[in-house]
Image (cartoon, rainbow, N blue to C red):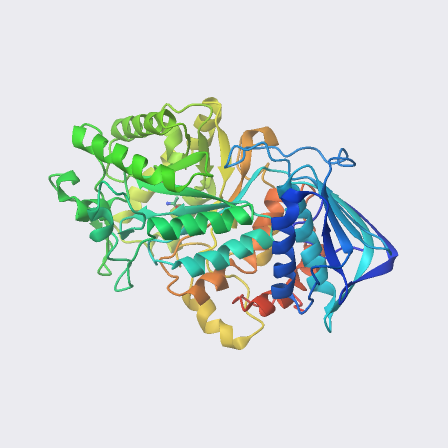
Length: 532
Ligand code: ACM
């Protein structure tokens, strides 16, 4: 029998007995550092299902212990917090009770997350009859995340907390916040108050702006840490900086340029100029203001993408100096794949997103005719350079964080119809029309090794990160509609070592909708799945 777990565990064995959870069953904490994870588990089970675990009773035992884990290899890749945290765990359900253990509190949290999913899948009338089973499990990659655009639409802290809850349910351990872009600046820099006083005002169109205060970010970072999620900040430079120029016009180029998209909007071609000393005092101020707000993160994401209108030499000089400033502050560098065009170090992480196949699609008349004439040459030039980014990154000895657009850009339209006709209007409206629609199956029908030429070993990969950009996403409901049911698929690609079999995955995914309903999460009811 296949347990309805996502991501699929490394090894499972099941037997015919059951152990009933709920009613008088409780959690026994044998190691003091597990008090927090155990309390979180009891609360999460209540929110996922109608099963209530009593605090004082016995039945589920949790402990720190590293025995019996050797059949699962340690994770490949790098952790965003650079901690030496082994996430491997063991979960045993017998007729007498449940035991969950691992070498770290994080490992036990991952094991309790599997137990959460089993309880929710079997919950009925406040009880869950769990099949007896043994799960020995651990992740394939150490970095499993979601990159979230909070600029094009500003998402309030409570919306971000709901996303962190989703990450935790699927054993994802990184929330990468895209905090700055052309339309807004969302993080306080005490020495540069105009960034938030002025730069945070807008979003796309007439959507409200906003930013996270230092207190709000501290709460978000702590909320994530309690769920073993590291929040990684992205400050996008040297392109995507229109909000910087609105806050500090003296940092803008003398002559502002843009490509007219013909629909009342335009793409700016203005970037931070590495030749100007005042740009570097700005960058240093930003790093000094932002880094302390993300104490768990060993990394700063420096953006680096789509610095349109900038000479290659200037882009490389900008990336190299920014990376040096990040390293000088004791942090590591992650950036979009364009940073591989600079002379980066083997410790820097390169986030792969632009796939060679997108260049092919631009040669396609049907696609190119949808693009404004002035934009096509800019994109074609960008894509031609992008073909060399992965070979360059690997030549630098850098490792890749995989975010291929065709699989993991969650702002791509949903490909399949909804089984709820009432969702069809939303499905047709939300998602960037420029991207090829993605089905739930597309989301799992690929392997991190083999997604792009030259990447054939886990040793070249840091991990997997989905991305959600919010040009077409204006509300929390639309955000959740694009995250679910895709997020579990991304988690399976980052965690599970065996190839995902579609019918098996579809049957494991179906019962998860009961949890989403209990949690009041909006989700896309893809007709590909026979939902519970
Ligand atoms: C990106 O999608 N501009 C990284």
